[in-house]
Image 1 (cartoon, helix red, strand yellow):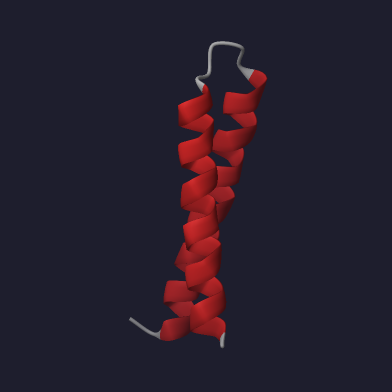
Image 2 (tube, helix red, strand yellow):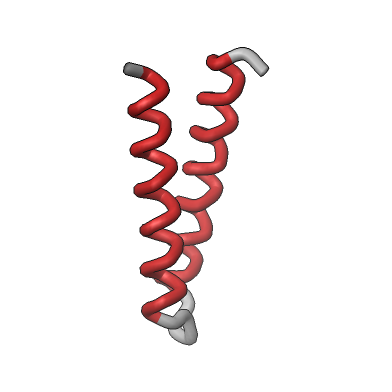
Length: 54
């Protein structure tokens, strides 16, 4: 898989996680640990994207 394609897939996953995070934060029954896990996954993806871009 070309690097550009891989980076685009990671960016799309990041957008999907952002959507999940927004939904979880709006839903009153969301657990703090669930929100923290989504944030952690987003940060890991962002770091991976930045590393691949450098």
